[in-house]
Image 1 (cartoon, rainbow, N blue to C red):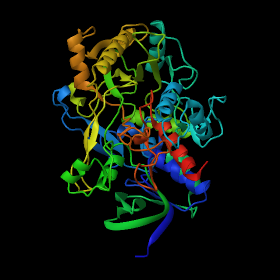
Image 2: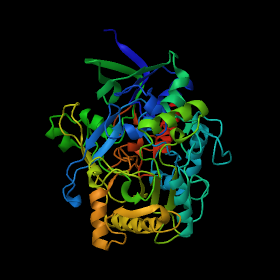
Image 3: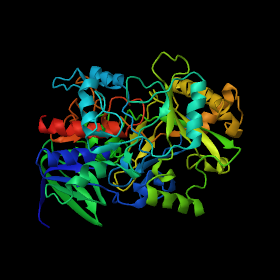
Image 4: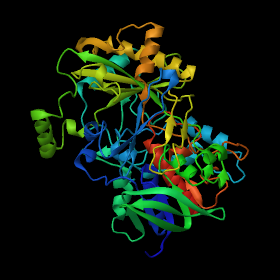
Length: 539
């Protein structure tokens, strides 16, 4: 086979990788190879905003990382789904458009300013990336763009339970917030979403689709990278598996790793980049001893509370039988109805301990019984309302380790959700606050009983048990190849996302972040891809 050579190779076609590959090709005029282990994003259920609820508990578009048993959760092991599709999380998520708050990025800047070849990571520096990508259909101001390729919209349909949630939370003294990406996160309101007119706006659609047929960009699906090829201290290409064949691609410029926070560290370790002792345990020769690879795993812990409705409220059975046909016809004929909703429309950011301080909890109002795969059998599926609470700045840290030297083996993942006692305290405070919503009008008049937790006013020990039993990922793993200052021995990357000790190798996905942002992480992931491509091009 002839030698394959490109200017740049992007290993991983998730949200960050799509943005980086597209910009290197379109703006940089480079020949780029984008390798994605998963499938095409073109599927009706992926395109429709609520379609993911039919796929989340098992489909070829997801890979499920089962954690190692979590001792602090009484030995429980839980799932962390990862997208197995072009576009990554943006092709399978609930599409909520949240950037985090300015202090998140100013914190990064303060941590990274110790680099000799520093980069500005302040809020003002990253804001131009967010605005440039954004095509908002309502907001256009100093914080929001209206002309970008990523379509951001208000929900196309709002369920009655979502409206009652908004009113009940306001009745508890929380103000209405019309823009969670505005001056302040605090408040209750309707989220905005990365979709438009009932169609998802994923990174694959927004950034790659305009380049279809462009000879500068080659996208290869079902192509799983197995290692980065390092010669004389420089990344010169990747080895990958495609249609059962082992192949190699070479890069004249750089290799950009964007396989996500659970797989990017795995690929570095398989390539001999990581903690030397751990690599030797698996018979892998250490090329660069970087002890921070696979450390600092951060994820937003999420705990559901569920109530049974006293009427046919919410989205239960809206996706089956004659209702599915009715909703499908309404969408096809008029472009309206439940099919234009992502299934979650309303939410809130609050600090139960101090309303004047930055929010500690994000909440999602989900007008169904919504539980994780390993807890679905704890209650009957019926008409109901779920409110989930999420600790937005968790202190708990976990790890990603190699299971073996076989690239086909999933990594060992230990997220340690709620292991830090402050995280548990904040989660319990959030649960107590939003349990009050079930007992506050107008939600209260539509609730037959609170099912989870099993008491409307649980004592501390009962609530702690509930949190341990039901805590799950909010699908936001981050931080496992983090950027850090030059004097930080656990820093994997410098401030320009370059892997320390290896030339020509960067990481541009959420594993690069020093700390997780407050709120959903998909928009920040795209910002990271955009920013990395600018660093490469010297912009």
